[in-house]
Image 1 (cartoon, one colour):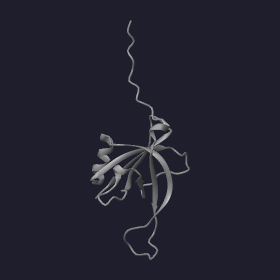
Image 2 (cartoon, helix red, strand yellow):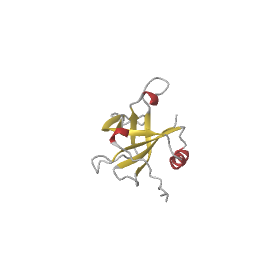
Image 3 (tube, one colour):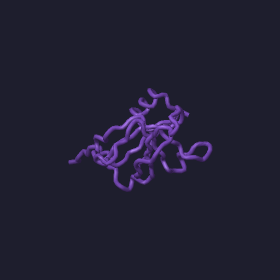
Image 4 (cartoon, one colour):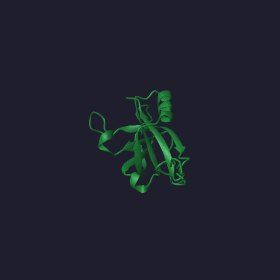
Length: 128
């Protein structure tokens, strides 16, 4: 008698979190003028970086971004919670702009990974 096995989604392990990412918080301009806000680093970690799913693409479309990516990071259980006004730099050669600088990604969505509560999923995008 043959047993039918049910599909099991591959589990994310520490070995999958191999790309360094840095979270930055926007601060006020020192002179009080509007414009590009300076950023200060608030958290560094390793992430699993992958192309956006259909659900994430819907979020990207709503925000009108030209380029998007999704990252999965460990849930710090309160040490740091990604915020919508924060930005992310993915330190990988594949995520550089035409000038050779790392792209500063905007956080568009933050949600817990309901399939594995050890992680948080962050959808990132840039408009230019």
